[in-house]
Each structure stands twice: as C-alpha cells, then as structure tokens.
Length: 110
Image 1 (tube, one colour):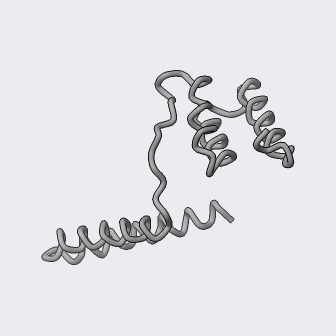
Image 2 (image 1 turned 45 degrees about the vertical axis):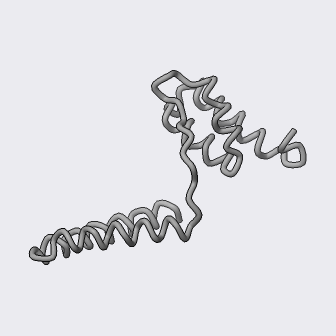
C-alpha cells in the first residue's frame, strides 16, 4: 500500500523478479536493484531478506547523510596523504586511481 499511488514501483519489482526467475539477472543484481527501488524504505529492503538465501542477506547499515559521506571520504584521503607523506609518488598514484574510479563511475551512471 505504500506505493499505492505509484504502480511503477510495484511493476518494476515484478520485472526484477521475473528477470531473476528467467535467470536473466543474478541474485546479487536482484539485491542491488531492489535496494535501489526501495531506497529510503529500509523496512522494505530488510523485509526482502525473507526471500534471500542466508549468504545474501542485506545488512542493516545506517545510511549517512551526504555531508557525513563527504567528511568520511575527505578524512580517508587525508589519512592516505599522511601515511605516504615521504612517498609522494605513491600518493600521486592513489589520486590517479581515485580519479579513474570517479570517471568510470560517472560514465556508468550517465
């Protein structure tokens, strides 16, 4: 009933499950798609665990607000920089890898 005014959510869920049943998508892909579809509805995501094998259960991890995510990422990069302060080439390579990951992630999402 939560999505009673939006049948596209229900229909998308059915499409995901039909794709899984037809072996067109993997269990991992189902979990990713359902988690995205039900984003912001943690109870629905966790309720979906009843249908998953034990090894694929979705964990209840608190979601951080975007500003906390940024702070965590910034602090991580700062720790890497500090760790390799005497090896600037290693840090530079880390930044290059990070940029490549960002570029690939951006191209996949667009």
